[in-house]
Image 1: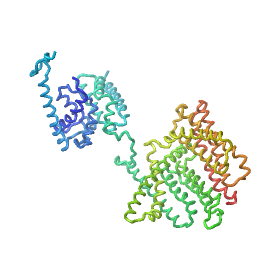
Image 2: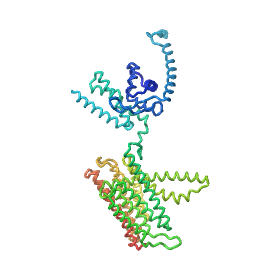
Image 3: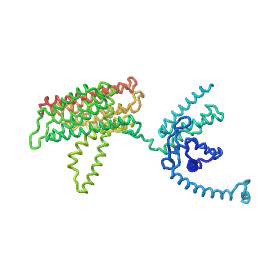
Image 4: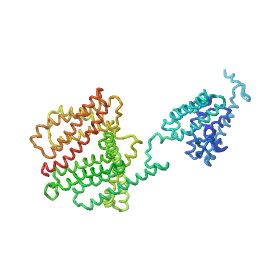
Length: 125
Length: 459
């Protein structure tokens, strides 16, 4: 399923922060978790994750540290900070407002065939 | 395909991918490492899902995204990486860092020693002329000493260079120069000529320790030319910055009723001047490979403008007929024009890749040199008859001699350049001629400093 670029970009920050709130993680694992959460319907351009992580690091929302993978490669781990948790809470409120508004819109103007929808707009003719 | 052979191709592919990504300036080495870890994990997962190595690699790279877009995103986050930054004293990585600190320390020691030497000189002589004619010797000794340390010049070469430099030093101080009598004695012609040519001679001699003693090497000579151009740029910037800083300090202190001038004359100038020179030299050596040279860039900007200026000069001289004022001034102006053209030529050559085939800019340089020679020829023919009338004074001979030295340099350069643009000569010949001719300037300066005063009776 294709999801519009702007929507992916807007949801990326709360998703990453939310995943990191579950515990320390690293780039590939974050992408995998996003796949799991969306049942594989949300595909990121993987390379774009890293500039985003660096931006969060620069703004002090996450903290990075170099560790080692099981195979012995150097790997950068990210952990959420206090400021990151606050930002996540704030984002969560914002998204809840958006989601609530959207839910009402879907209910009012749901296309035919979906439960709870209005009558087809035949009366306009 | 066997498992290990497949693993090898995969490694090769990852190597290639790493090469492509590393070339992006916005993506740093640690970013590449981070993304490579990602790529390998992805490949491993895809392989365990049933894809073979090559397929897994292709899918993983595709999922990573278009390199242009990813690189743009990195650039947006790390915009400073697009600007080359000069790291003078690297912070970590142990060993090379400590040598940089040592270099900084040694440079500061030389700068301080030069300041002390200037201070001693100021205290030792009360005659202003004596001060001015000795300052270049005192300061350049320390710069040359730092060159010798930095480029590990053998001590015998240093000793010979120092001995050679001592000759003009003795000459300007011991020659019985005649001063015009009166309450404000003015130094004579030969004295002024000797004082002004001595620094040129010294500067060229300082090239010997800068070349680490291998002054016959054309590459080393060209390095010295490049160094000198960058040094001039950095020195100018440092001087500008210092002037702003001093002006601000002076105005703030004057509010508090403190006069900066005595401190400035007694301490800031004697230590700041040589200090600025050595710091600039150190900066140029440190930045050598990291930052583009600015002198050749300026050359490119000014060459077309200089060509226009010279064409205008030539037209004006030809249209307005015989020159009205033909004197020493004209000769000096012509020398200055030739020196300007020479610098434009030299710094353009210093940055040109000898393997690139002739292009528009080569023609432009040739036109520049040709026009300069034409302007010079018109001016000189106008003078030729008059020179004999006035006789040969020291000043006129010096100006005429310099004109001749420059003329030989430029005429031969034009000849070689002509051969190059027509494809009959390699560019290396043009380049080699420049560095081969440099010692002629040292010889000419030595003649003016050492031979002219006795020749013209120290007048």
